[in-house]
Image (cartoon, rainbow, N blue to C red; front, top):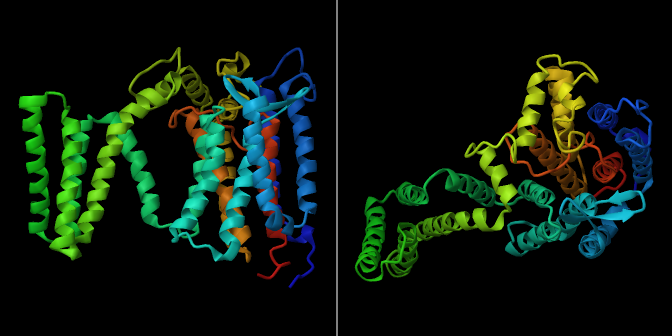
Length: 476
C-alpha cells in the first residue's frame, strides 16, 4: 500500500542543517589551510578553496537530485548500482591515473574522480538489499558468508590500487551486521584479533602464547567447573610439548620455543578430540576452547610475518610510531608531530582565523585534506575543536535515531551503513591528527578538500534522508 507524502515535510531538517554547517566550516577552513596572499579571493578558482566552492555547488545539486528520486529505485536497482561500482573499481586498476603510488583515480580533463568514495554507498545499498530480501538471518552461515563477500569484494579491489586506508574503512560495515543479528561472539572475535595483533607487537611472542595458553585452561575450568578435566588437558599439552622439546633438543635442533608450543597445541588437539568423542560428549566446551587456543597461537605466529613482510616500510613505521616503539619527528612521524604541535598551539580559544602560523608556513603536509582538523585546532583552539567533534557526535546520534524509526528493514540497514562509514572516518581521521591512530590517509567527512569525498559522503547521507522522508509512504 502506498501513501502519498510531502517529501519536504518529511525531511529531517536538523540533519540537513548539521550537514550545511559542516560543509561551510570545511570550506572556510580549507581557505585558511591553503591561504595565499596573492589569491585572497575565496572564490578564486585557481586555488583549492575556489575549487571546493564549485564542488559544494555541485554537491547541493546532487543532494536535490537524490531527494527527487523515488526510494523504490534503490530497493529495486541496488544490485545494478553495486555491480556498476565494482566494475569501476576493476576499470580504475587498468586505466586509472596513478597519484602518490596508488592507481585510484579517473581523470576527465581538470576533474579527477575516485570510485572508492562512491563504492561506499553502493556497498551500503547492497547490504541493505540483500539482508532485507526474504528476511535473511545472519545466524545462517551462508547468509553471513555472502554478506561478508559483499563487503570484502570492494575492499579487496581497493587494496589492489593500493589504497589501504580506504580498504580499512569497509570493515566498518561489520557494525551493520552486528546490529542486524550477527553473533556477538563473531564481533568479540574481531576485537580479540585486534588486541592480539597489538599485544604481538608489544610483548615477546613466547610469553604471549604462554599467557593465552594459561587463559585457555582457566576458561576450561570456569566453563566446566571440573578441575580434573582442566588438569588432564594441561597435562596432555605438557607431555606432548615435552616430547617435542626433547626430540628437537637432542636430535633436530631446528625449532624455536614458539614453534614447539604451536606443534604441541596442534598435536594435543587429536588427544582432546579423542577424549571428547569417546569418553565425555558433554565436554564439547573443551573443543571450543581448544579452537580458540589453536587459532590464537597460529595468529600470534603469523603477526610477525604480516607486519614485516606484508606492510610497506612506511606503513610499518607509522604503526611503530603510534605505539611508541620509535620516534621519527623529521621522517615518517613528521606529519603527526606537526599536527599535534599545531593543535596544541591553538590553546583554549585558538590563534584566530587566518592567524595560524603552522598553517601559514605549511608545516603540516596535507593540511587541507587528511589533516584539516589541525587547522581547526590551531585557529579555533579547544573550543573550536570541541564544537566540531560535538557536531559529528550529534549527527551520528541523530542518524541512529532516524535509523531506528524506519519501518522498512532496507532503510534501517542502509541507515546503519551510513552511520558506520561516517563514524569510522570521523574516529580515524581525528585520531590520526592527534596521534592516537596510525596515519592511513582518509578524509574528514564534509570538511576535507576534495570533490570525490564530498560527493560520496553527500550521496551516502542524502539517500538515507530521502528514505527517512518517505518512511510512511510504503507500508512494509
